[in-house]
Length: 226
Ligand SMILES: [Ca+2]
Ligand SMILES: [Ca+2]
Ligand SMILES: [Ca+2]
Ligand SMILES: [Ca+2]
Image 1 (cartoon, protein in one colour):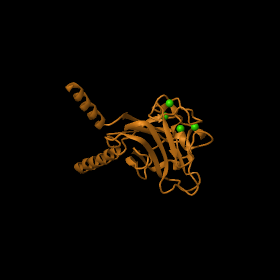
Image 2 (cartoon, rainbow, N blue to C red):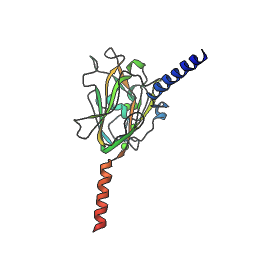
Image 3 (cartoon, rainbow, N blue to C red):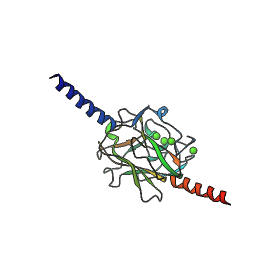
Image 4 (cartoon, rainbow, N blue to C red):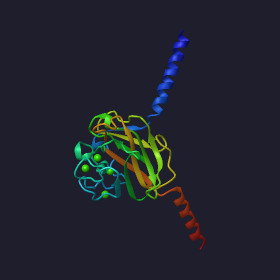
């Protein structure tokens, strides 16, 4: 009888351990102060939250492209977590289109993604993305999925900053990308009423690829021979 109880306990511990491993992402905190800051889209954190000025990326979106004037999509890069103009809300009429709600950042060079943060907005949780992806591209047309999540809730609080790392939450990347895209395919509320919101996205990475350093090494050897 005692052996049975120990066995049941072990099975339970294994089950809990496994589910924790599937949620390796890290909660950093709540609000603007919890953001890492200085991400690839604005290393100086000097972007104008009301206008597309001083950002170090070219942003495009298939829903309300812009910073000022409302709860437009570019607000996920305005370095702020809060209500109204600090977030992207609330989804176009008719629900999320087949290609997803997309926002793309074209960076000033190609970067290998090492980690990113993604933050919930201030309204109710059924508006949070549940099926979404982070993708990379070098032509702005053909995208490769770096991280994806299906029918899963990430956030446990409003305005919560959550960090995802290469090596634990997604594969260590060997390709550098000039374009990084966030795509949302579903929320709990979709397609009814105001069914969508997102607070902020931060991308971090190292410039260039392993191929680049090999090329540099070849050049060095060439110089030495001369
Ligand atoms: Ca800047
Ligand atoms: Ca804003
Ligand atoms: Ca924001
Ligand atoms: Ca930022």
